[in-house]
Length: 280
Length: 274
Image (cartoon, rainbow over all chains, first blue to last red; front, side):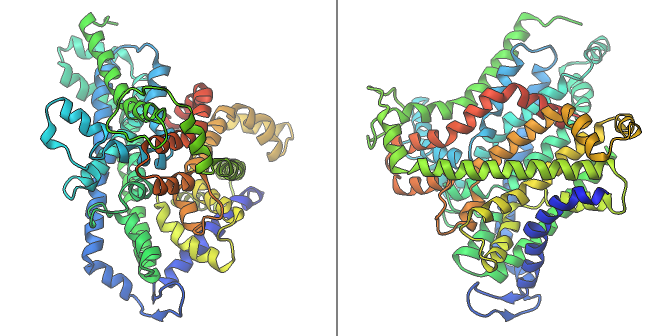
């Protein structure tokens, strides 16, 4: 009986996920440019990936972005929630609507906007000059040292509000008597934060971490619209590397192997996350 | 409960305002710039001297956004319909019925949620090339439905799991079959959760860039995101036109969000904070 309900979801799943993944696993065993006949190479594409400096570099960049997309927004959200949520808040709806707004915008809109804001004659450098930091002005997304942290900061801008919305909502369900009890015990602001706010928000913290982590590894579009992985390879991450290998340099077998490896890695990490949240 | 001290109240709202300004300032800058004349040289932000609506209409025509709106609307509506139906059906079956493999089905479907889209879209491209689904509405609709379905399943499964079993059993006792239980008892109370899922799916599809970039490589179907990206390529130095185009693309999503935000957040927080 239950199978009838699964017909539509399973059909979509088989067509869009299962068949492509099996097909990609097959292709990953070939040296193939996507057009001419492929050459069987066995596991060579996988073995090569472990020694490929470009792959290692892209992974390191991805990890740096996880820090900016996931750790910093959750930390900002937690600290602000700790300060703000100790008492009922007025106009909750208005704050929520504003903080969530970046989630509603197309990543292309975000990329196009920030690309101009961060240009040499853009508003950000104008602001730096206005406050006397004129010697810090640069083309932020075109600078070899600063392009990657700048991409990260865009992620922090996009996702901090989302984390705050989640954490503020969770904080409303914390029993206010816990704060009073902590005060009676003479707990300071920091003790109160660590013993009442953080434990009370455990579930929301896990949700926020998982959500932002997924966004950070799905960040192809923002990077592609702003820098296409450049300057040089400075903002090349796992997803842009796979795309360029498949469609720019036409190394389809190689790209498929990388895609399979990234997929497996993500499943392992996700499994670790669930185990962790069950234990907590 | 202790009342906040006045100094504390000031700190709290000052901090919130700072975050709000930080969120809105970049968007306000883009809006201000869009009101300058098309092609006018722009350096930094400044108040537009004479407000020109003309930039919007010229960007609308130059970027052919009329056709892009039609294409994106068609795709989004189809994807929302498919994902919502499939998620309700699948989530209902996996959460409330017992049959061999119901947990396995759920976890298999869910595993799609943690895999980056690029990992799936490259293989989808290779498959679609063989079955001639590239550069077609069907291909884009099918691919996006598949990519968003795992989250939809997760979302509806969480809702159906939270429904008290007694409610479903009372329906069964009255002799209603599982479909009548779903339609007459469960869907009415699921409305806020379903509305939020539809909204999230619509936003994902309207804003999708990677899927049409890869599966519509010829650009035959110009979606709004593809349109804006290629508009950027053609008007790199025309900052007012670029800003106007960005606003044109963002506006439908922002309007729907502002109109539905009350019920949207009710469903979102009900679904995420359990």
